[in-house]
Length: 268
Length: 268
Image (tube, rainbow over all chains, first blue to last red; front, side, top):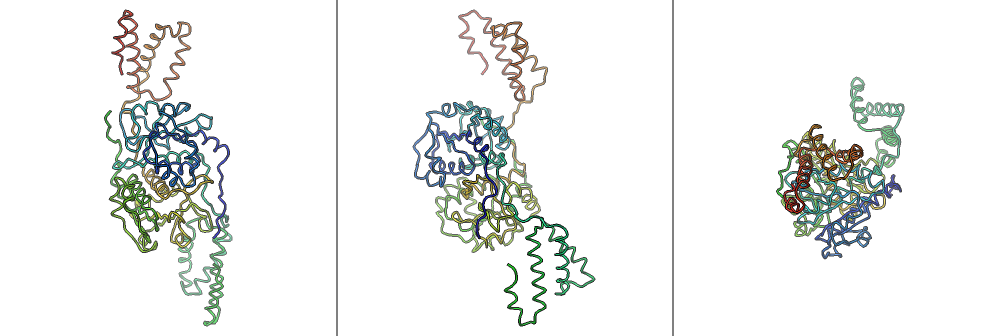
């Protein structure tokens, strides 16, 4: 199997917009988490990593988890405090797993995604702020924030790993750019006339192998049609199904002891 | 600050539906990843972890990363191969970062989320299958799958950490249950008559401190109204703004040397 090229590409405009998104980590504890965050940033097209009130980090672990995004780790900027890390940001978004007095106006990352995208599209820097693994952001931190994000979780276990929280936020922003489309069928949907030719061939085959009798054929073919109609049937699909029918007819016509050779010619 | 109780709860019906989602890991390499996956499952309300073709795992690292979800790790089931791990599943969803011949009908996790939810809601087991960290799922694995998920990423770096990939899939399913709502304002939006009383108080205050003259007052108040109209103004908000105006009027009326005491009485 050879990989086909990606059928999407992130536009220069989207790249420019995403370059104004800054991930701000306040006093992260674990290098592994910071590395995982770099990888998630790389996956979602965000480059700017800032660390406020840095503590000593296990950088070897960070590099290991950053994988192919370790350049983002090396390019990180450090600030003495959170206010300095967000000083040039027009929109400052805090993240929290907890409820409470200063967290009442929280929305989900999906709720804010379009507004974030519009803001960075206008060239305004947006900070996404994440607190330390053990305590999260405190009220002084939240006071600096213009918006608050809470990520959907079950009520029993609402504390996400920090790199998982960063990923969800960046994923929602990236999905909102509408840059991505999954690998789609290269083969076009087949027109009705071709599908009908296929059904005719299969009707003949199914009669010939005594899967159905002539008086049950219409009924059975409705079931067969229903199975074949569950998704868009492409030219490739029709060709496979007609190939099976054609080859089976051929095999059935051979003397019994020639059948084992015929099997080699069935289309893959 | 005291935490307020969560204002949402996952319903018994949703819990029952999510109990039919199985996360299947084929030959995972790193205990830390398996642990992170358990935590993500706990966050998103999914319990059933299966490992197919298990290799030796660093269980200590797994427990550390599983955090409060280590019970899911201990309860995992192991199967000799992938076919056995998905044998009782009506829908088998493979995940892939790559394109290629057998990956042309991929959709995003968001595209499939409603169908997955409907299927598990009907009591049918659904497997989400993730390949080993180094190679992902091969073509034999994908042949067992009825659906394929590809997760949105940039074109430059499409390889997500496996626990991040699991999280995105489970997050999309959980969000589709519509179980979660972020902490919302407890205070109701204030009615117009109350807002107008507030604006009258502020107009008087702003004239008194000579922020504006009588002939500019209408114009300036339009700006002030615009700032105050950017979000829904609640009773709490109006009370804060009226409190500031009332206290400021009082402070202005005091003899000059009494003002420092008055400041202590400004509402917090």
